[in-house]
Length: 250
Image 1 (cartoon, helix red, strand yellow):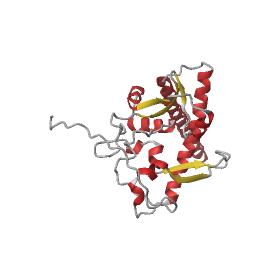
Image 2 (image 1 turned 45 degrees about the vertical axis):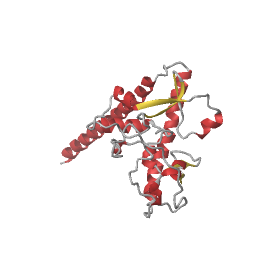
Image 3 (image 1 turned 90 degrees about the horizontal axis):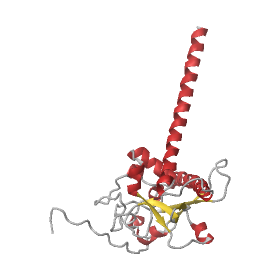
Image 4 (image 1 turned 90 degrees about the vertical axis):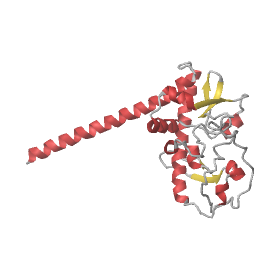
């Protein structure tokens, strides 16, 4: 064995445990153990807002994304009840319904998790990572007119193996709820996008390939930038007109 190039450590499966406190007020402090990022059975689902954030932060191309994003297909046809329980709806692909998520290494670790259990895209990490160990869900309300009625719970995975929940440090609930509201709003927008995509596939208006789906998502960023520049240009024009009027008055 070459000592200069030791094999990457195989992550041991997370051990089930019961934290000291599983009811509010919650206590949590991440100790960077990497367990939540090493669970073979957990998919880090991505919404289109996650992908756009990664693109803005990492300047990834479409080809770059295809190397780090996976399309996880069902091994059976999901029932309506199963689909109702899903937080992020699956998309139609050439191989059937699939989740969009980050790829994993062969040992089950997240593709962006370093050997020192550091996230290599921390500033651009997906919403599901930002909210762990908590799960946020909303009651049926009129969105976005009346805002979101968001509720907060611990995830089952966190209760199983997150040692950070044993911390003496009580969380600042208001800060977490702010993150939860943004995440929930992003999920609701994701549902709208996926429905449009799946409908377009059903109507044969688009070929259901992974590359095409990512292309549609990345095009949203271009549309956002165009709108941003349009508003910026309009604001600049209005400022110039206002300045000219002020000069005339003088």
